[in-house]
Length: 194
Image (tube, rainbow, N blue to C red):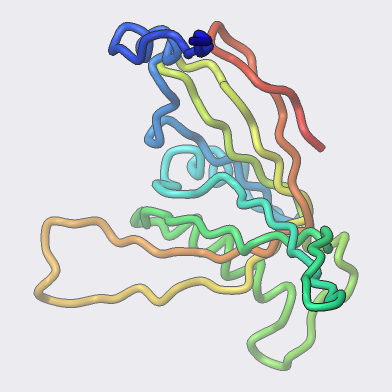
C-alpha cells in the first residue's frame, strides 16, 4: 500500500507556527486624507483625520468575467478591472473640521448655489492612504488610493433621545485605482502591487 504524502499534523501548535505575527488586527489602522490644494485645508484637519476616521476598508479587487458562448459551453475570460466606492466613517468633533472640509470639497466640484464647479479632475482629485498597522506601531502595508473625490456625505441624524454618543458620518469616495505598498517592520510580508 502506497504511503500518502500528508501535510504536517493539524495541531494547535502547527496552527500557531503559521500565525507567527499574531494576525493583522482590523482595529489597527490609520487613514491619511488629502484635500484639493485650492481649498487651503489646514494641516491640522489632515492630522485630525488620522485619529477621527474610525472606520475604513482595504480595497476590493474586481475583475469581471466575460462569458463567451461556444457550442453549448461557456468560456470565461478576464474582463476589465473595476474599483469599488471607498467608504469611511468619521467621528464629528465640535469644530466640524473634517465634515466642513468634505463639504467644501464637494462644493468645489459642484456649487450649491449655481451648479458650476471645477471641471479639471487634477484640481479636485488628490490621493488618500490607509495604513494597516502592526501591534508595535509599524506599518504592515499601505494602500494608496489614486485620484479620489467624494460623491456622498451622509446625513447626520440629531435627536433629543440620542445620548452618550459622539456624532458620526460616512463619506463615499470614488477611486480611480489603488496600489499596495509593502510596509516596514518585523512582521511585514507580501510585495508591493501597482
